Length: 72
Image (tube, rainbow, N blue to C red; front, side, top):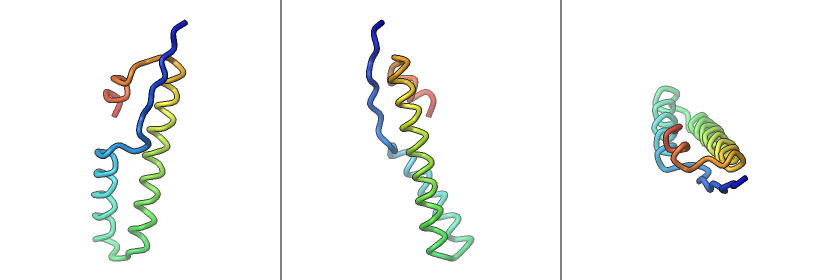
């Protein structure tokens, strides 16, 4: 059984960009820097965890990096 280790970044630039835009929009509506910080950090944490866990799953199953690009 041939397994291939898949390395993925914890957060890709596209994901970080989308999360940043969402955080800024929420900040405009809330006008509170603390809420902006908390929402931004929460979104980064969720996005990074999702990508990291999915990458580990692909590494264990032996799939290629193309599946990650298609999934995202």
